[in-house]
Image 1 (cartoon, protein in one colour):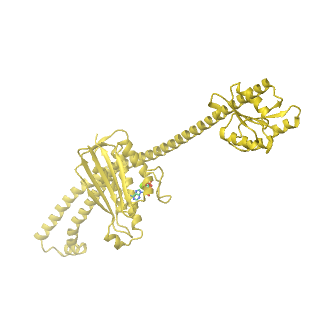
Image 2 (cartoon, rainbow, N blue to C red):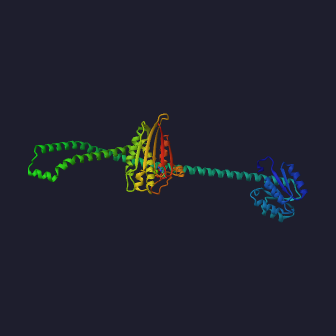
Image 3 (cartoon, rainbow, N blue to C red):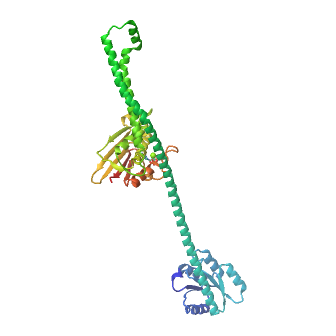
Length: 439
Ligand SMILES: Nc1ncnc2c1ncn2[C@@H]1O[C@H](COP(=O)(O)OP(=O)(O)OP(=O)(O)O)[C@@H](O)[C@H]1O
Ligand SMILES: [Mg+2]
């Protein structure tokens, strides 16, 4: 557009050579670039090709007249913004009115008053420059508004996300405290039972030994003793009592283990990293997920294969890492359960559901690698790409929120400066590989 060139370009459309010459001389000597056409159609063509800054248009011409030319210029978006000034005979008032109706911005009368023509042209060129500038500013403004709106929307989304994660981690930390509290409370009575159980067992053994001795020293007790012994089935009882104690002992040990796992799992370490044993974290998570790994009506146990390497303790937020293990393992169990849906118990027994956990220490890179693999349904490329996206889930409402892997990703990459990668194919299972640097 001619707005940026040093000369404004004026297109003159008139069939009268004398008029053309007069205008050409007057305008040319005032520093304008002049284009000339002698009929409407060529004028329109020229306007399209050269986008002049202003058009001077005669009313009466052979072919299409000035009004029709003006109408066509106005109708085309490429030329509609070019100001048009009609040239009419002094006396012809109706032409002036009609010209305005067809979209002209002004008129000049013939014979031309050179001064007047130049002033009018200058005014309209200035108006056009101003309106183009205004339009440009409007566009800039609109763009800026759009940009700002996008920024605000993005910030709002980030805020929402941060808020949700805050709520989530707040919930988890409250839950963690609760669990740790309960585990702690259980610990005392369980310790009490387990301590006494040992003493009781020793005492019971003494009593049994004593009774046996009695039996050997007095092999023929009187009738009443014989009768009570028969009623109590004393031999069976003496045999069974130690077994009962054994199973009580085992039960208490299991409670002890669960309570230890609960405390390890919910380790309150939100702020500072502590040196911790990753295997202990994985074990406590598995213990908590035990009920989901066990055999069910439609499928046998999920086998957990552990290939634990020799890894050092590392500085970490173990409670948060356990959250990561929990999310990955829970997803693996879901994937295995999906896989089991249309397979019979026997088929699954033949090709068992498995979760394989491998850990290794890479000395060169000073990092620890944890691989968690399942032979469940696997993922399509599309799911794999969106896996870590906030609120992305393929599970039905109520079953998945789509937060698990987002949180896991954040804990590994932001909190521990590690990486988490996935490889998976539909029907071939999934493997997550976590790399944690050793500080
Ligand atoms: N081991 C896996 N095998 C197959 N698909 C998986 C596996 N792990 C994750 N996915 C896919 O990734 C999606 C996102 O997982 P993510 O843990 O973030 O959310 P979710 O499990 O759906 O819900 P929740 O917030 O309760 O964890 C899952 O819906 C599932 O489609
Ligand atoms: Mg999940």
